[in-house]
Length: 361
Length: 269
Image (cartoon, rainbow over all chains, first blue to last red; front, side, top):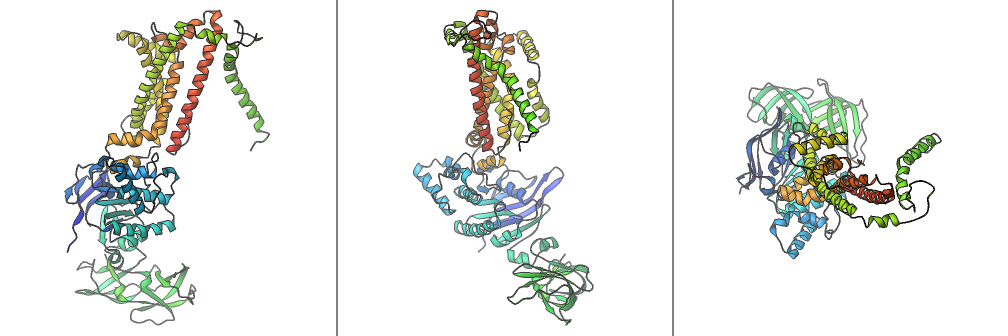
């Protein structure tokens, strides 16, 4: 069974003078999924969100929501609601009136209005705070009010513009889990804009990674991490070692290459690599490399020298110089109870599984 | 923080304030003096100058004229100021800064020049002189003050609040009514109070444009020729002084409240 698309972005561009904030973006967002727009600041993710909300119009292309073209439909008539980055809580209204703000047109009976507001507040764990003034709320509470105010409208799509960036780290992590739980329980499509890769990986069903107004890859968190489609995506999500390699032999599903510092490797994938490419880049995650003392080079094992080590608590990062390679290789090791940090200058053997090598453009 | 070096500055501040306000304090002082001559020594305490005010009909007419002009002026200037402040803070259009400078020009133009030019324009265009012409002149003079107060409360209005209102299904008109107006309300009231006070106290433009209906300051000026009436003019002046002070104090309180709401600081008064 295929899930229908709730949002279709067809060839959307948005130019501000000479600046191409969005450049030919295509995207399908499925009904009921938690979708994230991830990218560095200025990549166009917020511009795209504002186009979906109706605060701005595309220079070219169109946005469809639930199969209907939204061209010319203003924000107040779209089946979307937004949680703003600064939450935009109306300062002159109390919590109850903020949450009930969008219900005016429904002309509900006072009892009905009251029960809808209180159930919306219950949903975001603010039960009974109806009479609290907007100025008396903490950052986390403001965010919950903004969520309740948007969800009470029962939108087809909820848009979240960096909603967690104003919170401190602990609250942010807690809210990530809560937002995810909330999305599952209401079943509404959430579109989250974020520049925080951890946030996107933790919460999303699928993520669109954007750079300079273009979408580089749309994939699940797992696929994005394991099979990034470009160097930019690989570098933006998690740590990644990039290794220059010369193609020696290329068959279906397999590339044999001479990788700088790693020797001859056999890569069991040919994603992202054109047929006639002779020079490619291989990526390998620091935690997919192993490190051991001693000098035992061999198949998928090379010897190097530790140039630097950084202790992070649960992991230690080593930077290892390899002959034939300019930059040190980053290796991340999980720390056991009896671990000892290896000193700089120590000769070590780096081992890797060729399955972890990802060919990149 | 107070060191001996600051004594000079403190002394200067007191002398400055004394120079500014002591002469004004003579007004209420002599208005309670039981004598016609405004000079020391003071003869004794009396409220008779205040009671004579009650019986002068021309004064009552002048007061009524002034109130009508001041109320119309404050409402007109504030409505125009709301539109102006809104445009100035929300939209970027060609000539924006030049336009605001032009609105502020009456602040620095000599009032008598403004009054004479208005007189010429109104007479030549056949509008004639009445309280309406005084009101028009006062609106011109009050606009800079209305704009300054209103821009300060509109500037702090977060645009995302308006977007949130649109997003929640409201139209532009409803958004203005439900979000913008309540948030800038203290600024609007402050603007009403300030422009009311300015119009009530204004003399030169009113003197040139009033025609046969004098406003209160014009009436006071006409009474200065009669030495015997001077103490009752002082009594009237004291009342106006007190009323103006209260109004401006209220306006400043409201303006501060409005800025606190929109999270800004700094003032124009």
